[in-house]
Image (cartoon, rainbow, N blue to C red):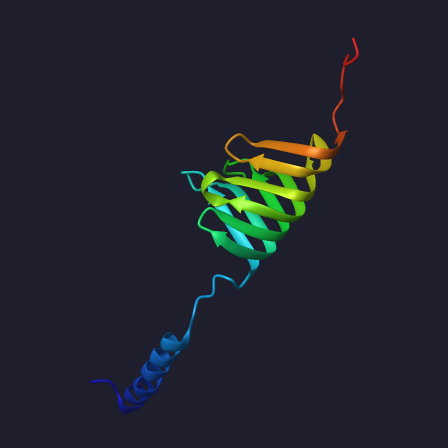
Length: 147
């Protein structure tokens, strides 16, 4: 039998939990603040991390993000970030590992930086497509490109 003090605590805590459980609601129309959505390889290595200041659940197939910060990792145990994608807003399709947006995008990695708008990223292919106002700065030497 629990001690009298533990028993008294149970008498207070259990009804309080029942009341909270009865009145707590999950509101799908409310944003999630400081959203994070990681993905991993079967070995447990990180492949991407979607972050945003705010996320709204639209459907099982879509989450809308404000202030997207997408880190794309090597997928190896070293955990190296290969590419960083930044955008004021984006739509994430978690089941397809796809992100897209109409707003501006900034893509940063060791080989280039790119900006533009009307973009998409397919994580399975590690392919970024930018449709409008594209500007690319290469950080690599281009030998004999005009020959």
